[in-house]
Length: 321
Ligand SMILES: [Mn+2]
Image 1: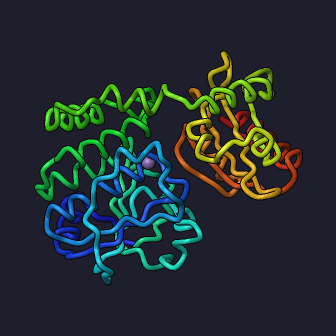
Image 2 (image 1 turned 180 degrees about the horizontal axis):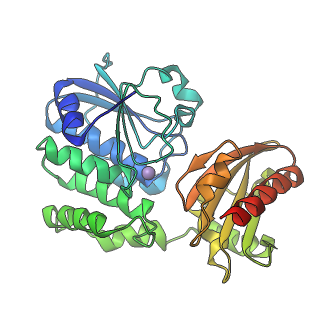
């Protein structure tokens, strides 16, 4: 793996006449934003690009998708991954691209270096922020479509500019995006991403409130969402968006753990930290990773077994720090 500067990355992209752009499974605002903004940039430059994802893009993000040209099949000259920290996160449907990624644009310090070339800024709030700098270097205009993608990616990865990662530089880039496209209703994007919930999701929040479990004198709040629960209330996977920070709203909570039963006896764990606990370290001891305040891992076993493993790791992690 070779580390590329923004300038080198821009050149690499300008030199390629076509690309497949891979984003991670369970797509979020940042990978969708960076993937489609790059595809749109390719289109503007008269190149071919297609965004590939193992999972369908959830409806709530459809407003971000530019009307890309319908393309005939093409053999990509470049395979790019956007916001994908680990090849495993490409998901099953894209597993054929493992070991074949030419260039990765990312902001996860935990990036495994699977791509041949890597443009990584571990300090950037979002892959969209890194991509913004690359697009400027490529002299790509910040069109309405690109602005919507980049803004949404940065807004979602910073929890609506509430996390530490939203520093002065991030705000400056966002200001530049807003200056470039002043007519976009940014407040509406934020309202739709952070405030508006389906009635089903409101009901789910009520159930989750009842299911909240408190550990370590309330410093660790946990909620376990089993398949049984999902079925009982007919909850769709996409309605669980942004649920990771939910238990962290409780006063005094330092770490939140959301366990989602992905397959029977397989739990995807999302961990969040309010302040000083490094959950990336904790998740790494469980075979996962991520950011200091937002990380995840996968645990197999019954809910009780998984819970015990996680709580032990959290207790250890908190004692160490
Ligand atoms: Mn991201």
